Length: 303
Image (cartoon, rainbow, N blue to C red; front, side):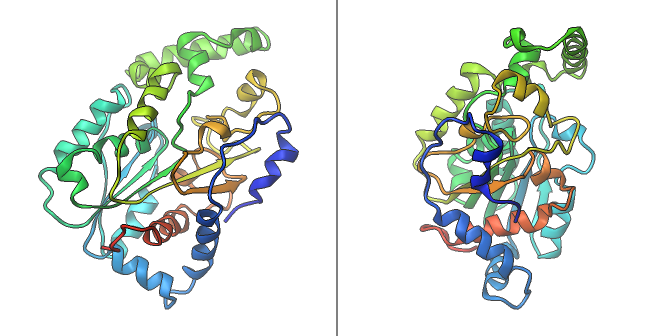
């Protein structure tokens, strides 16, 4: 869909060795993206069959509710394919577990149709948390996550915990962080932001690792060199904190790759693009291809 993943070595030469992954998921994603361009292809028919009559819940990232259009285009496209697609209500100021519990409670009243959970960034961790509830797990056909990190956001650590301060370049950068810090408190997002820092996010990842899933989980990870959304793209700051280390504008690449999980690895995709699109990136094609990858995993019934 975008770029050569291995080109990160050229752009970010100080990137640590990445966790090993099965290249099959990325290959299937690439093949599915091409096949989905033809509505009559076997891949298109399989994806449409899996989505028709299913319930699909889109879970936004940390500040997704403050980003107009976040996952809206994807929701509309899924509805056109016959899915009951809706965007989960969550609060930026709540913990991962709080939002997961609220989502699970909502799903307890939505019937017994086949269910897909699609989560972006922090929303992916919340989707995985909701999936642990028995009444949710029993319906699940797949959990698809994009840019969902296992390690901290250095940007939020800098803003909320005042870490990495030695790397701030000049008074204007310190002033900008002070304004951003005040802004997060004013909108009540401070607690939710802390969930993506230090030991908190690592603990959430460990909890997710402990789950034995009878449904497929597919993660998409990427790096980027071009900022696309002001609220989610912090290329300059990440370059100050760890020069030459690959990132997606919010998290470092090595923290976006999940062990024992199919990882779709993409180049030149910024953190917000799976939710917001822009700069030639098609979020609808992205998520449909992710569904196709999940359908190829053992344990998926295809709806």
